[in-house]
Length: 236
Image 1 (tube, rainbow, N blue to C red):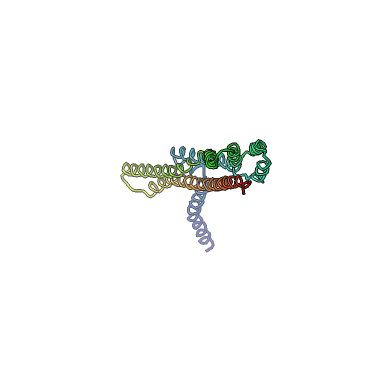
Image 2 (image 1 turned 90 degrees about the vertical axis):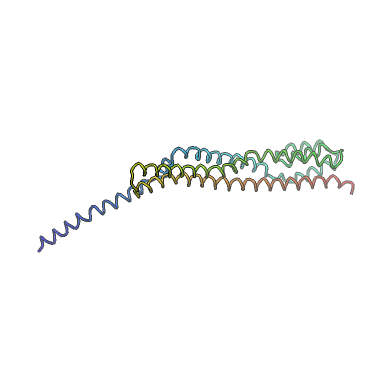
């Protein structure tokens, strides 16, 4: 009786052993699929997608630093300029603007240097400087919008090429295997995922930078209007 029991136990272990080893092997295969492995499985199209991601990050941080400097609101700059102009110290007002490295200060400097001309001429000169400053701070931001459209396309092209390759392999093998289809398809869908991630990132960063530029533009417009109003104060 004891011998039969031992035989059953040993037999059960021998049956359970392949199942356990197969499950362990599956878990091990799942655990070893790292992000680097997925990137490699994406194929050569991951190279342009990776380059687009690097360009996106570079443009964002480079423009972020520029916009942060341009977004600094010089404390009491307009009030100090007003005091200098009312005292008749035009040169002092210009020096004051030159000491502030902001778009507002450069725009005010141009307006101060045009004092004595008509209001329309002063407004036009300040408007020209304002457009030039906005063009400077907007530089390269539009590239993010282009990347937002191109990156997902690279991903979709990678997936389509992968599907074509899968069906080509099926035609050669003359059979349909779940492993043959799913294995190749998940590898090629990596490019779609990567392209969408880069595209979404570029889209969000593009609109964030544009929002910051619009805020600076509104502030510069307000500064220009306040300066024009200030020129009329002595005659009131």
